[in-house]
Each structure stands twice: as C-alpha cells, then as structure tokens.
Image 1 (cartoon, helix red, strand yellow):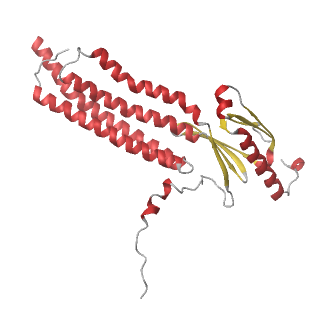
Image 2: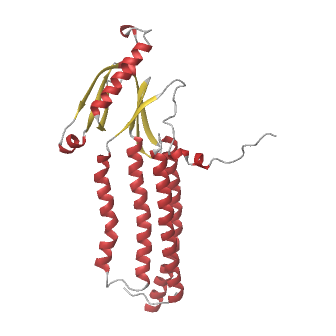
Image 3: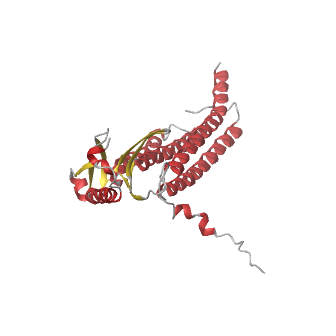
Length: 198
Length: 88
C-alpha cells in the first residue's frame, strides 16, 4: 500500500519570513541577485527620535490640561489619543517603507536603482554592467567614518552618466562587488567590443 | 437658551466619537492595506515581510485600544445622558 504523505509541513507556512528569495519584478531567467544595497540604518535614527518625541506629546498635553478636563472629556481625549497613536504607528512604518524601497540591486547582468517616493509612485533605473566606466565613493563626517557608510558613485557610458546612492554601508566592499561583477560580465559576454556599442 | 445650547453640545458630543471612529477606521485600514501591499509586492528578501507582519500585528493591537476607548466613551455618554452637563 502506498503511504500517502498528507501531513502539512507547518514550518513551510512561515518560510516567507526566513527563506524569501531575493527575486524582483522583471528579473531575467538566468539573472542572479548578487547583493541588495540599502541605505545605512543610521539614516533612520533622526526620524525615529522625531516619532518618539511625537509619541510623548499626548502625555505632555495631558499634564497641561490636567485639572481642566473632567469626566467624559478625559475619556474622549484618550480616545482621540488612541487614534493619534494609530496614525503615528502608520507614519513610522511608512518611513520604514520608503527606506526599504530605496535600494540598489546588483545582479550578474545589471545594477537596478529603485526608489519609492510615495505610495504608488516609484522610479527604476538600470545600468548594464558592461557600461560601467568608473566607481568612486566618499565617506564624510564623524558618524559616517565611525559607522563606515558613505556615498557611492558610478560613472557610466549610458544616457544617465552617473548612478549615485547615498549612505551606503561599507562602500569599499560594495565597490569591490560591483567591479568583480563587471569584470565577470565582460569575461562571459565578450561578443560586442566597447567601441562598437551603441 | 443655555439648556438648549447644552443639549446641542451634548448631541454633538454623543455623535462625535462615532463619526471619528467610523471615518478614522475606514481611512486607516485602507491606508494600511496600501502599505502592506507595497511591503509585500515590492519588498525584496525577508526583511520587508517581517516588517509588514510587525506593522499588521501592532495595528491590530492599537486598533483594539481604539475600540475599547470608543466603547468607554460611548458607555459614559449613555450613563451621563444626552442632556448631561458639559464641564470644561
């Protein structure tokens, strides 16, 4: 008798939180993601501090209004505050969304620069690895030096002359990854000489 | 005239939480859906999915507080009555 394997593998139900592949829309069949680069987490510190300050405001207002509000006005005030916190929670995660969606995707074919400006408003630019002419990076300031993040710039032979991303963690390592990908691509795809490219 | 004004304010106070609750709930959950949509569709890797989960869980908890406080406000309105005095 054939044993039926009808047990549900419950661990696979949550695999999207642990094993989600780095795939993206428009990925080519033989395209592999080498690295996904986002801005350094330090760029979220100031917005986080601002959100924290806004979270404390209702309590400060309550201290000012204490003795003035009575009875059901107190309940009404905290009801409004609960909505305030709900929308503050939303605003904080909106900021995180903008941070997460501003990224470079380095694949074995190209570099894709995607950015989300607002809900349903995003831009995408891509650069073929062959068109890279020069890569440089800058690290300016106390915190960028201590935490090792800076801006990375790629000079290209394409229509868009420069690709730039700011606040990138470990820019020298990223530069190495891009150069290696560029050299590998040229080795694997030597068909069209550079001076004959359109 | 004072009694009439008091009653009018009481009526507004009785309706205001309900209007705020309905409107706020509607706007928030539509906006939350759009945010989750962006996290799940455009997010690459596991981090956006985890963050989407945290956002949804936190939203549910905070919304529970909103509902509880809305019930508290309404219960107080019922006990105080429509013609209850407004104390400022």
